[in-house]
Picture 1: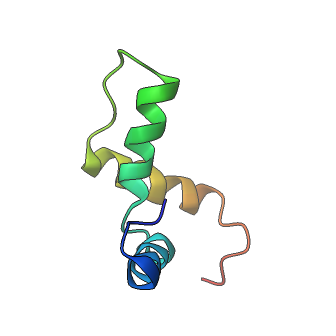
Picture 2: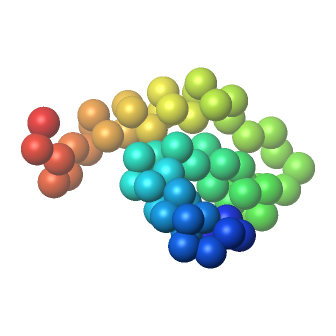
Length: 63
């Protein structure tokens, strides 16, 4: 969701989304709704799992 602040806030949100800067925060929001009462993965474990999943299923990645 874009941050308040007009076009600059929206642009910052978009760039952060494209670069993956806010993926862990999105995961935490999803986890709180989908799995209340359960502890979420740590940031380190989240990124390790995400990277491992991409390696297992590269899809359309070029490398």
